[in-house]
Image (cartoon, rainbow, N blue to C red):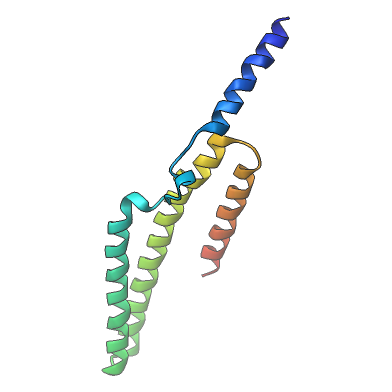
Length: 120
């Protein structure tokens, strides 16, 4: 009898987790709360890229251009890592909360994104 009571008690907890409505369900992405900061950051990176264009147009020394390319690349990589962290905290955590196969899908999705980032 105790075993039946325990398994019956566990079922509502699982059902309750599936009934939870999160930001993710409402179409709110993990980066939403830092959206303004991200846009500012991307505008700075855009400025760096425009600076690279100017450097080429002005026949700047190759090594100086390469230094700026490196800085721009690092800025984009840093942005990508921040976005990945937000994805893990938001989307993957949401899937873990709800259980089921979705967690496996989200972890695979994040793993593929990490692999793409490592190739660059």
